[in-house]
Image (cartoon, rainbow, N blue to C red; front, side, top):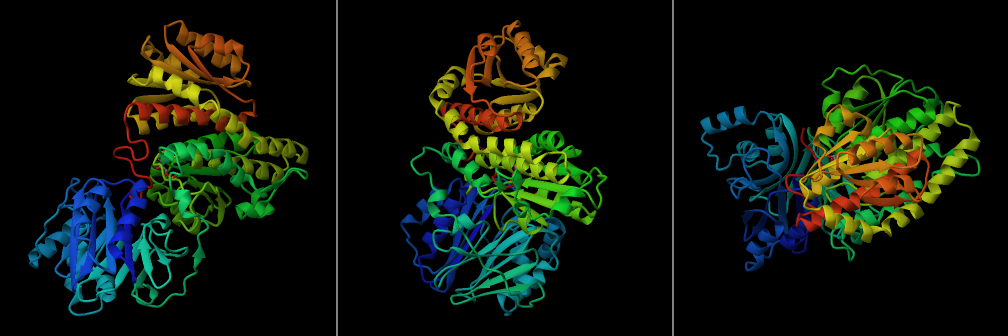
Length: 608
Ligand code: AGP
């Protein structure tokens, strides 16, 4: 959702910024633009659509510039169009913005009365007029500070001024921004992949912090102008991790990376021999775990499905009550949460506005916060007391795949640690559960080796216009995730349901055309799900079953089946998820959809 990149240094600023925008494409956008210094002036080029269109506009000009800012816009105020695309200008002030200016209407009214003319429908345009109003020959950073005192809402900004060539001012509130420190060149961006082929050293800005980039230095200050000493982090991701590496799409690459991602998520985090989980990995002491009263898990989208799975795992293994909330609902329902409770935020990006707001609310109410997150330096991680880093590596495909399965790993390890601390799990049973965890990367490999068969099934089904996904118990959220993945990357209507609920309504949908995907692993609910399959079959429905290898009962009832290796109930959710990701992927490709950047979606949803 909106991407920002700014550059100042000795290099070719426009190329660096265009390359950064390409690397931010995964965030989701509908228009793009760049502003660059040339001959003492700032030129702006903008367009609707993809960064490649923008690059096309600049191809002939090949501008020689050493300072530039760029933006990918995900429309909030005003349709996707060239006029609404960023950068926006007010006289010599030019800026790009991520976020929403909540009081833009009243600011706009005042600015119009003061003589400013608006050329776009955006909320952003008020910001450049406001900064211009306060500039009056003063340094850009001072004008930005003064202007922002009048602004309510969320923002990450990169601002330049024609009077101060070589300077880029970045500032944030409730929207991510980080600074890359290269060799004699500096970057400001919404996310590290925008520049990590140029700079590995990064400073993450906190709310209310400003960075002033010039040709030879970066100064970080508070909004009052006080200098700050910032910690510099070194990014270990290699640029190739954010490239397709021979795969046709990032989504496919990331599905295939899961054995590695899971191995990385478990590495060094427990001892099988002693039946122990390394608590330092959660940043929580044993007595802190022991004293947890109740747990709230809060997340959005796919991460919310991981949260639902986490409820089953934690309640079953550790016998602690867990409530799960969709983040956008949590803070508006006046939750009964208090000191002694644990709030777990699950977020791949660590920048989802709804999850962050819920996290803040939980802290305000006195709960301890654990963040299960995939992005080091993200807001969720920095604002949590305890962190479990999922180690999946950069997830570029908008549809989350490997981050989801690694979140389940985090929840499983947490449940075992909690069960041990609460003395409801013995070291011997922890050992068995941890041993099983070590087999999962190989078992996921086995599932992936059946990709051709899954593609064949996708070819039979890709013209369907509706799908139902059914599962019971812990596999009900897996059904939700299967349906979400299909919706996201194929635009086919799909619903996930608890299989036992089907007879209370959705059964009316069953006919010869409707594919019904059943999650039917071995386990205590196997017989129940087999009966649900019978109910669909007897009404002529098309059954696709995901079953445990060797289950001839369910395969005999199914039109198509996909076998997965045997595992315990908790970890079989991971093995069931992988074929669902592949079904969605193959159907999306067969339907000609942009599986990596589906329409209307953004990778990290940084507005409420
Ligand atoms: C997943 O495929 C989605 N694109 C989306 O639902 C996502 O999981 C959700 O927006 C939450 O993102 P987060 O994990 O980064 O907080």
